[in-house]
Length: 397
Image (cartoon, rainbow, N blue to C red; front, side):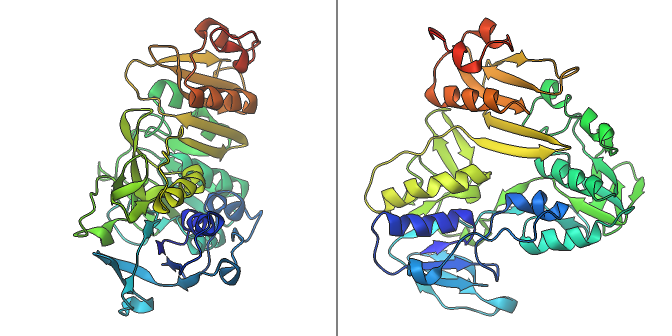
């Protein structure tokens, strides 16, 4: 059984069939529609370039019992308890093997009536509200906040983005990097209010901690997500910022695995637990979980990866920059160059992370080097005239 019908759930079902599993297979999805891709929700769908992001899915061909609109409510031994539409009690579903792919849910701020962007319906409702001239306040200057601001400005809205941190994308980027993203907002005609802590939100206003209020026609909250693990309380699984799994993606028992946003996996590469919060993880992890569920012994330990389209720029980011002892190496000057990249090097000059702005070649090469664990020559890397792949220590170019 697979619980969760997003990309990770679909890739698990496909993987089971591709890897030779021919038995009974059930896919449970809380939403009433089939699997769809989430990145376009804040990109193409919100900007009006696309109306749908449905993924190719043929339950009959995959020989899967697909149950849309069915929500898992409790894991009890080898049984998943469910609820249908309107919280009606659903059937108990037993399993021999279980893959958890329930994803994540938005962090909710105090107050009622504000919008959140997580589902297909959320995106279409928000798109309808983004009328030319509408005053839009976005709480959170992270990846999603920037993408919504981009779409809203493209549609002619008046946009204000509110962030309590001193720089954008503060949950992922240190201030010395994040500060270079701040000017993009003004250049696009959006207001960016940093150091502003929000106390409560409503449908047409944001209340700040100092008691002041900012009025709006539309309020969207994008301050992060948390793994959808509430239904797993009391299940016996270890929960700590997600379902705790090893590098094999097993959740402490040989018949239960977790993939995608809901998983908190152990990474031998980083010697730390890593959350799978992005599309790439949902795409790649299921094949490993399936292989191990079927008796294999594979490890899943990639370099984390995310991309974001912000104000006409392609931002690509991979790795974990907050490892002890890392230092920054810049390629280009963000203050004057439209295209630039920055690398985080550890104490052994290995690439811990890379961020590239409209520099896809830098990014692809940097990501590959990070995956390989090879050391680089910092002096060469700092020279934009030298290709990144030529900066590997001992490389012949």
